[in-house]
Amino acid sequence: MILRDEIKLVTGNSNVPLAGEIAKYLGIKVAATIVTSFSDGEVFVQINDNIRGADLFIVQPTNPPAENLMELLMLIDASRRASAMRITAVIPYYGYARQDRKDRPRVAITAKLVANLITQAGVDRIITMDLHASQLQGFFDLPHDHLYSSIIFNDYFRGLGLKNLCVVSPDVGSIKLARATSASLGAELAIVDKRRQRANVSEVMNLIGEVEDKNILIRDDMVDTGGSICHAAKFLKDRGALDIYAACTHGVLSGEALERIEKSPIKKMIISDSIDQASRNLSDKFEILTCSELIGETIRRIFVEESVSSLFEEQPQAANK
Image (cartoon, rainbow, N blue to C red):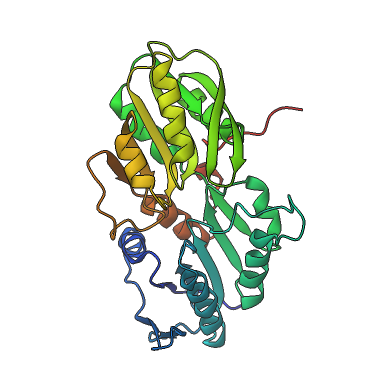
């Protein structure tokens, strides 16, 4: 029997700081890798460390630009051709996840296309965190560990000791996540009913629950343009809410998101480091929590063939049928 006796970690340019923190948790170094582009923009990768027979983990979120996805595919291919024993793609933020169905004529189901590309590149296992829809796990015909950031965010909010707390889902799509958060924190639950006019544009319509004279935690899986969460915050403030906090796992922060959040009633915006924010000039309104220990512990358990189910204790549960 062939045993994997060495763990290796490589990364592209998508989130180098996170890969470094994961490596630090594991007590190893990130493998020496060249990931660059030619003058015409064509991506080039080369793994300089010997990875033959290694249990290899590639840390690479697939947020824009599209080169991040290309880097992941090429790192997988290079690892397979270099005879890595097992290749695991660690994708803290899975880009294109919102394009998960054909909801209008002549559109691509890009979330499935990306899953096919990653699979065909030669990966053996997938690690993701807080997918936009849990059903996306079914797009991969591979072992898939879907992590939940709830343990990170819930510990943070317990530490704040907020009184009279109400957890709010900014739309119906985040109800399970908000419900799990409210149950873990012993808080009340409210839902903002939202009608979306077109992509990235939303309009708040109604409120289910009571928020008057309550501290608010808006819980969602991602913040992109910031429109939904900022509209929800203003809507809640107009209905008598006290301090408003927002917690979103993935800080995409595209377009005018930063400006919207700065002008919003949100007191604190808490995001994880699933997407590298180093290039952004974030104000003190933002708090970044690291997911490196959660991912690092998952990698360690996979390497030593231990169960990772205890890491899912605070995952959102499906409604009883």
